[in-house]
Length: 154
Figure 1: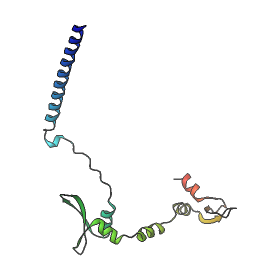
Figure 2: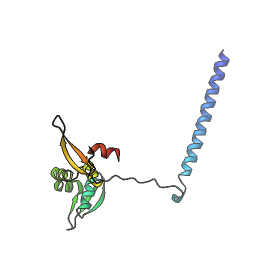
Figure 3: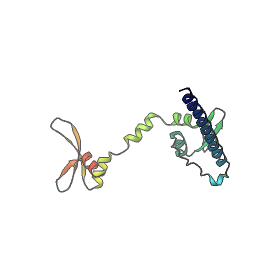
Figure 4: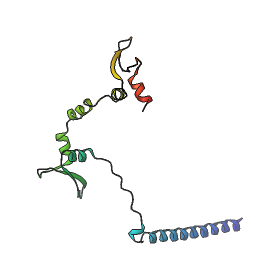
């Protein structure tokens, strides 16, 4: 039994050493692959999300510039008149909640617009409980709920 324990222990040590050496060879080979010329290594795809402050700056005629500093990167909006302002500060000062609300209020109801685009007339009707709903009425006399019609066809 003592011989069996000794044999198993010796095999475990040998397997550990061979595993570590194989791992080292793989690591060394992988590092050598990184030393290839940059032309053979594909560049990672750069995906960026639109920053609302940067977009607002550009929409107002400014130029969005990324500034790198020791504390991190930040955006600066270079305005037409030559003044520079941090993008988010410019956004907060010039883009109020009222502006955002006005943009939504000015948008047409997509179901009503779809109804009219398809030749119907958008009307508001009350049901038996007094609740209002948008109805699309066509020239042939048929009428359908605007949102149902919109969802079925989009």
